[in-house]
Image (cartoon, rainbow, N blue to C red):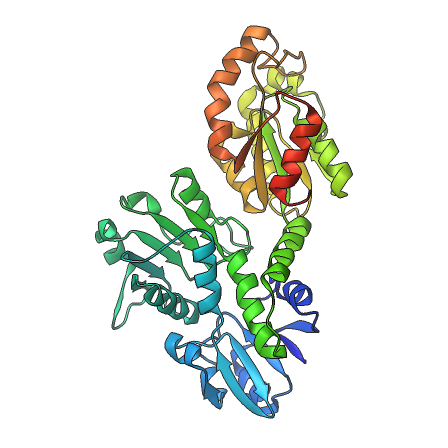
Length: 412
């Protein structure tokens, strides 16, 4: 292995793609059990590697030297083989700082709960200190200078920011959440270093409470750029970093359209799919196929509750899809879990259309008359806004709306 990543598990890691885009270097993943570390480092058969969970601290005894960043963090996520001499670095520090700065999250003067006590948590703690915040490490098994989760909840009013530095919420266990943020009444920001899914359950909960948040995908790319600089001796430009982020999102992230029936979702989804080459999935069409009948007949025979249950099952399945365009049914926003599933790996765009331009359709049981459409719009408009990342007006030409979506998604 010339360059690569060690740790476990690595099944959902994006690292090989990221390094290929940033530095065009041969990069592979190598899952190692802890008992294999000694032989791996004895051979030293690599030029440069990244280290992830659970070995960011455990690799330190095998190294000849630690950079100041690694000493400050007490953890290593990057190792360079310099003529047989292994030197450890921590690029998570700068990656996290850059992500916070670019997302307008400033920990200065804030008390910050750092969830976790491993290498990622120590790097996060150091980054917060460097940015003049006050970190408090929270662990399931607290030792000196840490608190447990029970004390965290008891002191909930003290914390203005939370950083999840544990793997809780990472795929394939994305239904899990490391902490209940509802009890933190003074919370001003939530950060999750988990990169996959793009929006963890923790971040979705922050979004639902209008709390500023950012996830670990950008941090992953930025720390990788710093690692590649150490590997190759060449700095990765901001332009290359931005291009890497854009290309990975174009490949991995879904584009999800929500909105009222007849708002233009279907036509816009077809335009997006045609322009980008992404597969198109119309949720109502899939549901009709699964049900073996029309939505109208399903409502009549089994009731709305049954249909909504099937809709939620489909939304749950779709969180494992990548790089597709999804056009949803108008009532998808009636269940918050639906939207959490669709947000995991998607940018959600609400298509808003003046109710005077909407029209009834016999195929939609809840919007079969003009009056029903108006009532439904008033009931749902705040939900479309609440559950979307951005709202796009579709009262003019479809082409203008399409162009705006392309700009928003970075695929213009």
